Length: 166
Image 1 (tube, rainbow, N blue to C red):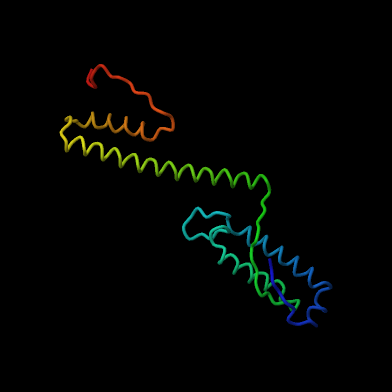
Image 2: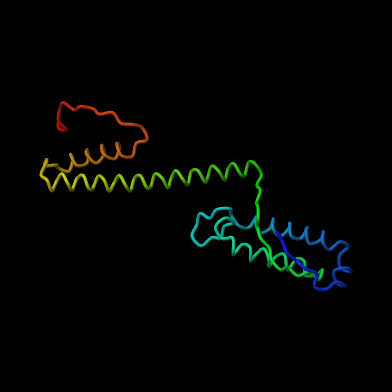
């Protein structure tokens, strides 16, 4: 969306045949340029993205449109990105990337919680003196707990009739 006005009517009439169409074409060109120079989502710190930095991107867009239409005596008052449409294959790739990022974030949260629970379990076992665990048994317990806590499937108990050392 662009709000504009003719500042210099004579310039607008003499420089272009149809200044309204000229503004539309220059606006579309500027939007395509700005949209192509910034990613939709930023995956690096400090990188501007269309979704997360609307104010900065809109300022760039306004400046670019103003530069493109100034020769026709037109002044840009305001511009805004109201809707971005992507080709289906690009939209599908963006959706897959967004879903992958969500899965990674969820896994990170699950692992952090599981590690905290394992630490708490080991500390409680030690402070209550339930059983004396050597480093090998602690490693086995940590492994088993992490599998149970991080698994997406329900786990099935296995009864160990022997010892770790047989």
